[in-house]
Length: 195
Image (cartoon, rainbow, N blue to C red; front, top):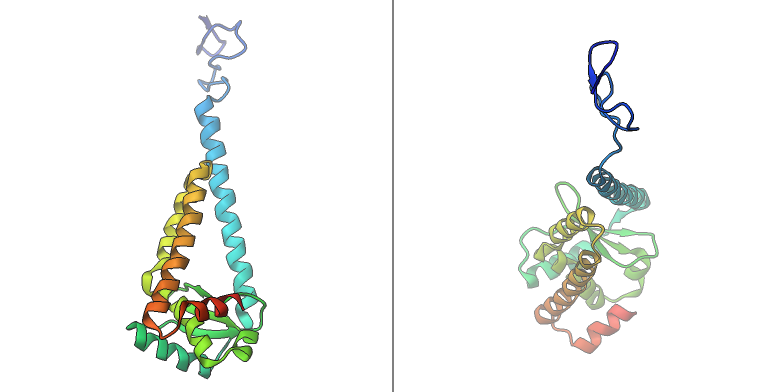
């Protein structure tokens, strides 16, 4: 050990790394610190991408308008499916599939205007029933939890596979719920989904 001019002791001044005269370490970061930094960067990247996508989606949905026809059909579905609190339903001039979006205070179902124009009331009820089933089952919260787990464990491919399988199971459960609560055959329902 040697003494510095200021009286602080340094560890073996011949080594390239040691304790500096100010007491700060000059050793390279450990593998654990590097791994933690990479892990946190991955989480930040995944969450940032999700926030960007949500902001972009909100901008696309600004032109959504309420539809009396859709509201009435959703009320019919809600009565059959025994859903007490119905989400809002809006039509949007986008090329997309119908989807349920959770918003603070109240969820909302978005249906493309082209689909509203092309499908009959019975077909639209099946489509709305499917999205209402997601609302009734609480799939939005399950997906939020799955996203949080995937963001934290982004390095594990099994987590991403499990998340994909969860989504597929949700779709099958909602399809089964619509078929069981509505007077529609599986073949007719499949035809509506594939149209």
